[in-house]
Amino acid sequence: MDTTYSASLGDRGRLVVPAGLRASQQWEQGTTLLFIETPHGVVLATRDQVKDLVRAQLAGTSLVDELVAERREQAKQDGAA
Image 1 (cartoon, rainbow, N blue to C red):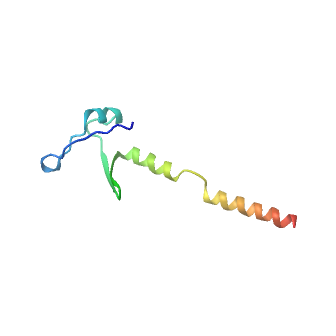
Image 2: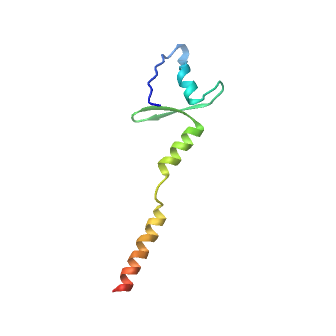
Image 3: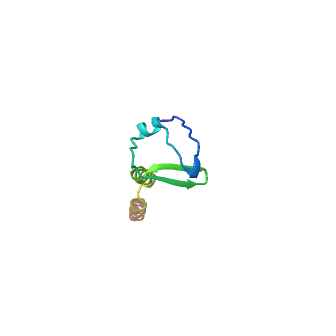
């Protein structure tokens, strides 16, 4: 999955996605692709790939769960004193 592909920008801004990349990503004719501009470059992905990326970045410990755990620990310490 860490393969590098290159393509040249054609007339009127057309870009041909290399066949190997299309195959590995399972992108077929008509697949809508999003170009996401970041400070480090451009990310090219489908809507579903972007949803998965955002969900993965937001996954993790819930701030609410952390706060509740902290409050319970504090209450336990206050009760022991």
